Each structure stands twice: as C-alpha cells, then as structure tokens.
Length: 141
Image 1: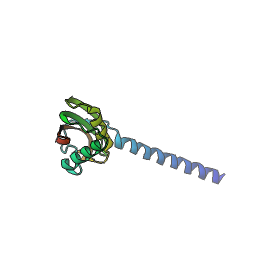
Image 2 (image 1 turned 90 degrees about the horizontal axis):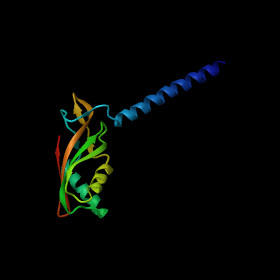
Image 3 (image 1 turned 120 degrees about the vertical axis):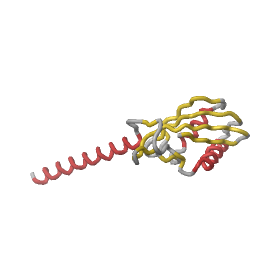
Image 4 (image 1 turned 120 degrees about the horizontal axis):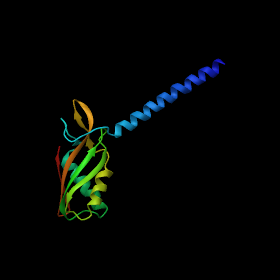
C-alpha cells in the first residue's frame, strides 16, 4: 500500500513538472501581446551587414536571388528571437515569397525586443533592397 501511494505521488509530481515545462516552451514562442514600439526594438545579433551577406548567399545558392526591387516587411519577433510572421506591406521584387521564406529560414539571427527590461514580442520594420544581385537591409524599430 505504501509503495502504491509513493508511486502515485511520484507520478503526480512528474506530470505537474512536465506540464510546467511544456507551458514554458509554449509561452516562450507565442505572444500574448505584440509591441509595435518598445524601449529596445528587436535587432540583429550580428548586425545588418552580416544579415545581408547571409540572405544574399542563401538566395544565391538556391538560384533565387532577386536582381532588383524593394520590399517593406514587418517581422513579428518572439521573446526568443524567432521570426514568427512576416507581413509584406509593399514590394516591387519578383518572387518576394522566396525572400520571405529565406527570412523565416534563419531562426537565430534576431535579439528580442525589450520593454521595462523584460523580453517581449515585437514587430520590426525591415526595408529590403535588391540591386545587382545584392541584398541591402535597413531596420526601423
């Protein structure tokens, strides 16, 4: 009887712990509130030049590099720095979907925004220009 009671308690504790970890994983990537402006907007971990090179090399490798045009994108960046969504506001790039796919492909390039010293989900405006087989990136918080 004691071993049954002990086993029951252990199973209960393990299930509570598993649910707590699962909930933490979910809330780290999902956003209950998304800031359009915050004290520290999302930023690129390695800077815009490195990100431009990363996008250019990736698209060039796949033979999907646009030759010219521009795009205004709004990226939703999670508390973990993951790109959750890309909203295309305006573009003149043929095959802009390939560019969006490349942006979503790189998961560890962003730092999350901060509000009151806490990590938050936030939008960042990204201006992208394609000219002579190079990608140019400019961020606006």
